[in-house]
Length: 467
Image 1 (cartoon, rainbow, N blue to C red):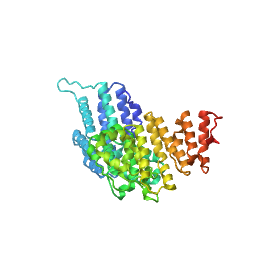
Image 2 (cartoon, rainbow, N blue to C red; image 1 turned 90 degrees about the vertical axis):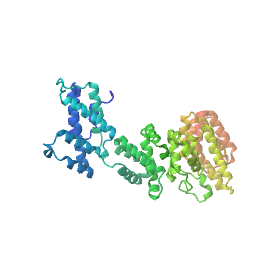
Image 3 (cartoon, helix red, strand yellow; image 1 turned 120 degrees about the horizontal axis):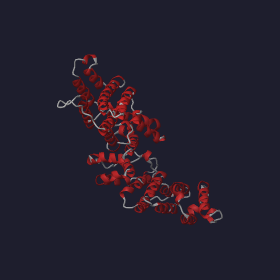
Image 4 (cartoon, rainbow, N blue to C red; image 1 turned 30 degrees about the vertical axis):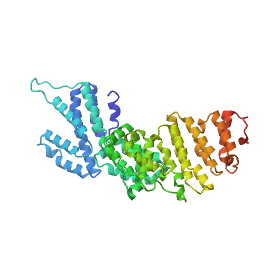
């Protein structure tokens, strides 16, 4: 507990009056007056609860809080009532709110017991009980985390307001600023959640993203997805633990026989080669593919229950298929499988014309290439990804697709190319007539190629492609 500095944490207590009272408690602790600190601490806890109930009643118009305060009465009406009974009523009332859970109630009970020992002499020898430093410190820290640092809003039904805010705020800024959207949620809600509320929110968002169907859910699915990801990123292992408590419930996700994403193309037969990023995804199953590609530990727990679901969904588009790395034995194996997917889909389309070649060349988005680059760096498999990109360029079969392939497949990883890779790139360009014979778009990629050649091979290096 040495890293928990009371004076620093005191600044984060929302209520200014409570801060003053707590400063006295901390002063007693620092001077070694541990018995006085415990007695005072218990009183400040009760005081904080009263303030929170009043805020709920007056600011948030919470009827339950209003009823609790009415039952407690004001100080005048309780003069003749035993104070201990009044304390029990107060703790019992707070217990009805969502401000504290059962584990936290136990911590308050332990403080109350020690407070009684400190405040009342023992009958045998009339000596007062004096707690030690560690006991006192533990009580103070527990009350900071359980009571004082909590925002009053957590005593309300918090899940519904969060869901409403997700819907409203995502509509306002949408995909234009995901970072701003998620930071809003973290600052306004996530940093203030207790364990019970956090777990409930996780379960609710999970259902809204992966299990619920209907127009309302479809409309808000992507916003809820980003909200869920932001929540889990705060502590992946903790939320994985929540999932483990009910794996079958969380894995209750059906096979999707409908579309996985918004179709922006003209020809239905090219849907599997359509450029698809997260903003076009509509199905819960496709979002699950993306989710598991970011949180691989979850796949380990869910694998036997969802493999069929995600494999079925990934077959609908090459960009979804790219995300299945977590289900493969090796990075190189997965890259080969992606290329084979392209070959297999192309072979099922009879009309092999210009549009066909262009579609297969430009099917993978830069979003997926950046994902593969991130995974390659984690697995020390950069050279495998470079080889994949060069192969993709080698198989390019359309003048018009050449700049896209460079900008999407080559340039995101261009700084990973070594001398041998650059030489191979130049030979691929020279031997592929669709690249060497292309003149319309060369201004989009040749300056970048020349600059990288000069960097690795020297300014005076010559090659027919560079002319």
